[in-house]
Image (cartoon, rainbow, N blue to C red; front, top):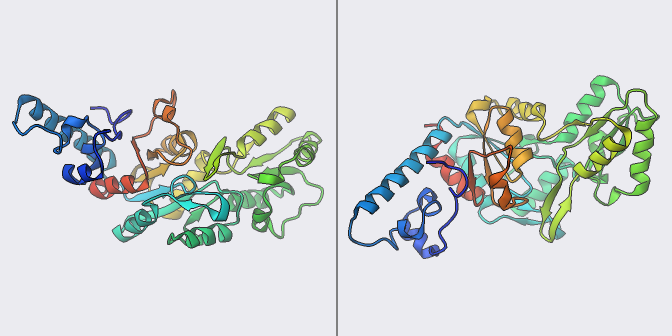
Length: 329
């Protein structure tokens, strides 16, 4: 029984009260047709009922196999925990409680984000105001990693980043820049700022472009927003260079998160909303990955030509239900 594709789709006939009657396990009521729910099933036991029960058992076994031995979770933040927007954004229903349940379970946990519009301190402050129990030392984000690269190579950056992220590069020499660091600058993106970055790069013998992620877009409460990726691609094209991505889906970024969390790739599960950045990046590093149907998720992601998740869930809360049922067994 394949666990991909329609595995997680909830039957249209089941309302909240039906879920209670069908049991807590979403692997039954979100996978199979209406007739499989006990609320809708005929009372008389038939051969078809037996086949359905066997199918349900097979799906449960498949989930158990795919999540067995998981000791640590990497969680994306935007689109998984909350959707950004006016006033800081809105928590995705069930996500606050899901994070708390993971921490209570004893599983290792780390938040792996490409957030580049806020410093870690401001980002964590926002999440805490929304109700999440998160600390700065639980966050792996690209700006500190980029700073370390600049320091190791003796690079002086032109910073095309959001004003709230500049504090992550405080104290660095930015005079006579010999590289460009680009992040999600938001309203800081303009023809003038992009052209200045272009001029720095085009005049270098060995141009270096560090990009804090390469996402195409993300979701806020009022709709989808362009991410850093399109701007990064514009500079790559104009200067005929390839950017060094510091952030997801770069393997080095995931390995750093694993090292900080203290787990091996094969015993770690990534949960994210980006089929390429989260799921693809994690699986390339040997991790397992689930995609949530929140944030930037699109239905076509479940049929991506190159990347397939180990499973698809409606939200983080459902993912945690699964993990706590089958992980580390």
